[in-house]
Image 1 (cartoon, helix red, strand yellow):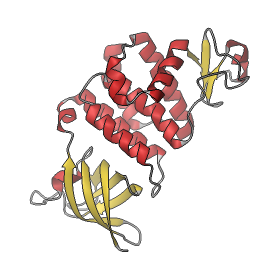
Image 2 (cartoon, one colour):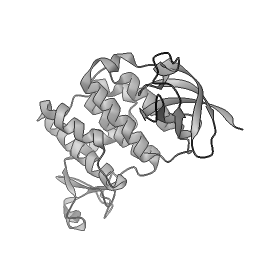
Image 3 (cartoon, helix red, strand yellow):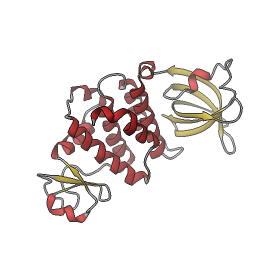
Length: 250
């Protein structure tokens, strides 16, 4: 069928010709979709509000030979509170870029779609940095590369004491197996326990969690190195956060 419907979050919108935008959408039904929205940059366009980044909208799309196009769209949820704070906008941008980076086009992943909605709804509340860490670790689980946190990934023994995290091997290392990956990063036992907690808890429970700034730095470094290994790149919005937002934690 040439026309199809999708409920989707706008991950990205960039200029595409005169008055048009190229959208990256993440939908419940079809996963990631790239589509052209013609004329939406014009002040008179009724579609304009529904194609803003971090908007949940209902789309009617037309399949194209190379690129689909937006025939109709209706905004369902704008997540307005998160747009009132630069830090939270930065974290929302990071989460959206991460979803774009880890997902192929045309492969639905409803748990990831629902996690994205939860994150956008919860972003105005609580600690956005912890929400981002929870989003990262749960995204790895939903994408098929959840790290091993319960035992040493190399010898499968108890990971006690001062442990390490190996992005290449995919989990924590006990002190005796440190030599298995000389590039493994330090990872306190508390970091592994918090990551396991984030996998078990719904994101709405994170407001109960109080984490020392030093542990936050370790969490950030562990997840940054793990995602960088799997994506084979740094996300642009991650650099923005490191330069402009996270200075208050240093």
